[in-house]
Length: 138
Picture (tube, helix red, strand yellow):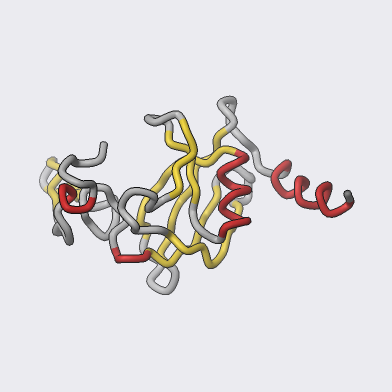
């Protein structure tokens, strides 16, 4: 009983927004590169801790989303941190397969502002059709 109370207290310290979500930044362990930003609800954060792999809340699917459940590109969590306002979670992860983005790139931040236009500056590692069985993930 005492273990459950202690387990819940760390979740209570997170400042969830009015939808019960918190932004989650996935940072590559070792390089420090930001791979992606997603959302977590209480259950996603708890499942992440229990499983050791990133679980997010998909706003478009309106359900929990185990990163890599379709692609196999899971994120093994090495460390979790909470920012000073307790309203952003940082996951230091190992990106299995080297692809974090549904576009088939290493990370989701592949567009760079140059001369007033967003330009794609990082190449596709693997065609999304090959990853998701013929249809690009949205």
